Length: 377
Image (cartoon, rainbow, N blue to C red):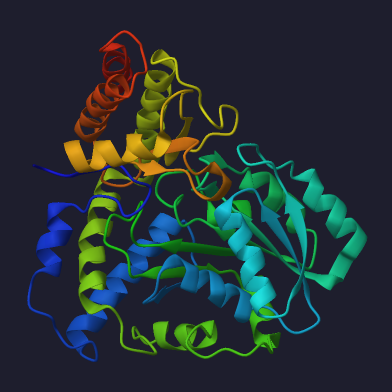
């Protein structure tokens, strides 16, 4: 039985990347690997839409998130943390781990942030706030945040804008330099279409000036060490060699498709999913602030949300994601990011319909898949 992966990370890996990663490993302190790094670096800049270096870390995305707390801030600094889901809360947890006082901006899960809330805090706190930590696509809720409007606010303050784009990069509009975003963090296992294990960070000149002043303790996630190495087409520590080699192939595919075409494909596929969900009589969890990367759907009354996810995965080989934290058993999530294709989504909805009927939810069989196909054309 073929397994279909419609989870918001890890996502499917294209054959070109799989084949490249299966080749014999090479040594990382060689001209051959340095050439690969150089190519990957340039193509990452293309996807990030920045002229600044993109640092490559061998870690999950959380490692890069930790790096942009430890490498930017100092004892006594304040930060603003937007908490609208599990991963927004992680910013606060990281700040707390390093003793950084943060001002939480709590947003109801499933709702969008009003950027004016950040402006009010910055007007009050002024230069005390050194970083504004936000999430572009909140993977746990399927909500997208208006980063462009937030950047319009932060550019007039000393604070740097730090964006978690781990599940957004390559799926959701993100114009790093054009919008004036200071720091963007991402990971390998979502829109970039390779397995987990690599994380990425881009920093503006404004952010690097703050990093030069940072006195928080750090070692592996000291971003200054990565900047020094990237200037030599090298890495400060042993990299995940074959993941980088696989990334080179995935980035080639992205560049061949073109970033705008890529974003439009995600937009079309996510719309098709939302329309198919509504055709089944199901309710979107974030109908007004949805992300093109992942769609969150309320589990219908009378259906066991955990059993829905488990049955699709274990009986039919189609993996979707359930809810996290207080949403456990209350929502399920279908990803449209990266190498998830139209055929994958069709199989996903065929299976979703089958299992919903098995669990006692009544609807006109086939209406979801028909609506999906209509919108995918």
